[in-house]
Image 1: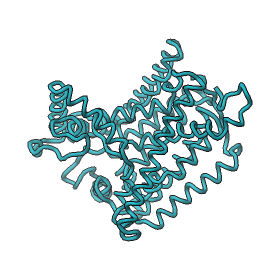
Image 2: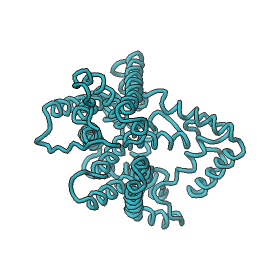
Image 3: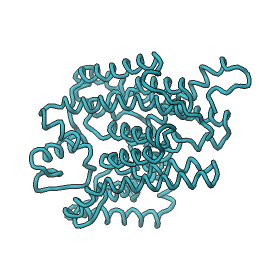
Length: 420
């Protein structure tokens, strides 16, 4: 890619970093004081699983109903807080820690990949991102997954320290992340593809590193795989919901989003249900290629058309506070910000292309990861919440665009707006 690394220590960070960190965390803390946590939808499931873990030591709806449908990591983290309090204070604290990690790591990675000022701009965009603020009071996997994904990236190809130690740390962090969402498994592969344009020798090295990271992820996930073997008789890596999710996005009645599972799977075990629905989805795709391709487009639109889930999952208390019109306004603000960031990210790709060539516009870490998470849900099932793992990478690319827009006029002739 030809991007220069910019390594800083805490003492080297500019004053703007600390101001943005104070603002970003302040907004999240103020939101937490204003809006209580109220689990709904998936949040309610995570809460129930966490309570069952604490009360019975079983991950499931009850002591007699073990499950692996949802990944255990989110409920496990929440269960830890329930050891100390029956309130949701621990949930908010965990979300604030995740928010802190997202803010600081977005800055670090943007500065490493592009330039220090791009890091500050990316941090600013994340600090004021409404949806990321709203999720401070939502019991969910989103903030945890984003934070841990970025934490692994901190070590991935880190320009200082022992390369093998950094690689192992990246794999270990992402292995723990797999307990939150197993889709982390192929992130190293997506990152390896970035080096396709850097020649076969460099790509071979990165591909080997990706293979080691994937192996480490699988090894870290092995205890839960063995647990699933004992409970279900089949070694499922983390969760059993891939088949249902694939079917939701690929069947004759699909609109690309969430839908109730068909009644015939009711009596089936989780493994049987997943295998059956996976086979149904594959059969639909083979027999109806035109419809399957059309659904890919539908899911791409559905994934990006709005950003209202942070409002929806806080809606009960928001409505009490600001009424229906206020709730609508919050949805419009959140979606408007999303559209601006989306346009900014695409513009950032153009800016990279103009400075470093068309291949650099597509073969860089933020684009690779944005593309990976997008492709995953375009193939499987899409809702607006599923674009959230791409949020920091979209912010970084939008920061590149802002950097080019705001600072390029000050750049002396012949010098690039961000280092190559």
